[in-house]
Image 1 (spheres, rainbow, N blue to C red):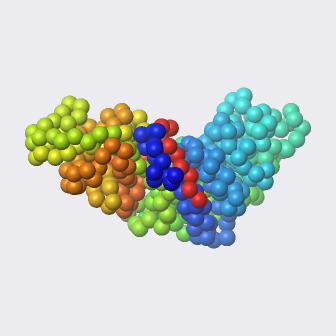
Image 2: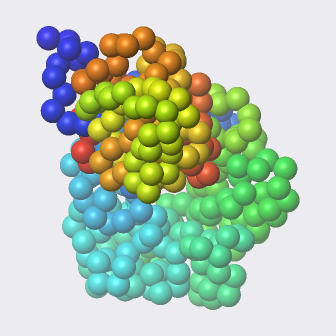
Length: 370
């Protein structure tokens, strides 16, 4: 029995193309001016499954991975080969430093307090504990601020027991190539590196890779672009699409002109038509705000308007443009635009592709391809 004919016990099917993820990673790596390319797998690989994505990228040759939390790293560690380095972007929360060591996870140290606690553990264990250090170059989010960087740089014994594996920062406006903050952050990053021991440097995120070789340094850290999100909004997307979202029709009914549909009767049929109730809602990450925003479902390339409000478990689609019987219980409708994919759906919702991907819920039947 093929995938297309297998009865679907869940409301919808999410296909995740691991071959496309690997292809995107290779494409991004090829753009780098000689540096290495890591992979950011935080938020469960942007909602697509960190274990499966990490395994596929490791087979393809990726050896440096980043997540946000220690818990994410502990769950992912068994799925990566021993040579792979796994780093936690938020660094160690107070008291968790020994767990990093126990699980073979490397921290990104973001503050003087994190650095001092990590160095103290190295001294207690009488062993070297490598780490990355992040410096704040103008985002005021994570990383050593200028005063803490100065204090660290002026301490002659600061790195005793803490080999510096890399220095990183994060770009705030990389998705706007002409924004002056990009050059300003790069200059601040270069100045910060001069104050620290020699170590590989990492500045470029997904969009930063497309700013050009001056931003590449030794290691890039793409995230969203791996999963098909356009790295430079407004330009042609060079990344391969990774996800396809299809939802089942539960039932189809005819409605008369003037018939209200959905909560608050927010949509009224302007003419007699047929309404398909589809088994996906905001509990599945199909955002409630998409109701009334001109969103569509698709069948065979035909756009079908989403009408009325998006509910927790369902949405309603006007299928009156199709021949009667073309849509029935069990029919799968695509919920992401065939042209533009996750970014196009995000634009309808007034958000970004990152939020759409990371909002996808756990109720889908997940099918991994490649």
